[in-house]
Length: 294
Image 1: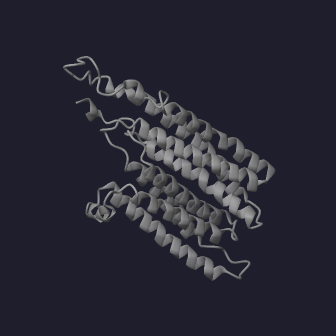
Image 2: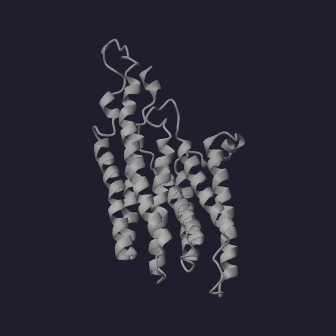
Image 3: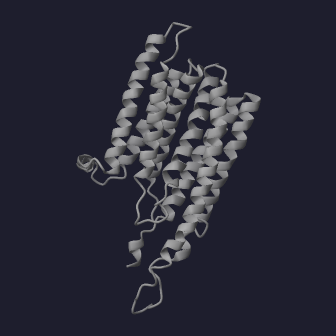
């Protein structure tokens, strides 16, 4: 299957935006990072906007996207609802932040809002990933698809927030530092597990048999080897995804131990973004439909 770059960018930037917004909620619950909240909110909005713009390049007739919103069970409708809810919470947070300006002892936002921010962020990422689950594409039909996207959000969010805190000359709190390390570990486990599941999904095609072609009666329609993320052109993508998913664990730990999040936080973010893109590239490379065999 061809690489769908608009969708690769859409899912990556939505996960990044939601992760950062969720990290803001985590910071509120931990009582830290007040000065970083407004810049982080701006960053989350910008990331969400970039993802939204990217998805339109996937559509030949973008104006027809609104036709899909009539079906509440469609993935695109559910994504829109989640993004709208998250956008509303962003506005509420902005109002809260403006009200707390100038008051050193005032909290950035109430804890009930922080909980809603974290929940909305997680649901948005999971719904976005769930939109790609379909029985017709065995490599995609696994819950590890949405969960791996959530893993990306879990590492990108806290790591990005930590970088913003250091830029704002604010000490990175224990909650965000720990969140970056745990998020990096979760992302590594989920990303590698997803690659292994995609590799195992090739077995789903073996029962189909061969396609009868008068000139090549025993040749399959699709090269079975091409359906593995660790074969052919997909190999580099899969290896890069695995390395860039595991490496942030090391950089996040270094950031937590040294306190130099400006360096190690930025490296963690860069690795996680490359890993997320590489994983989505492998995702599309092995996304063959069973109907290609008939």
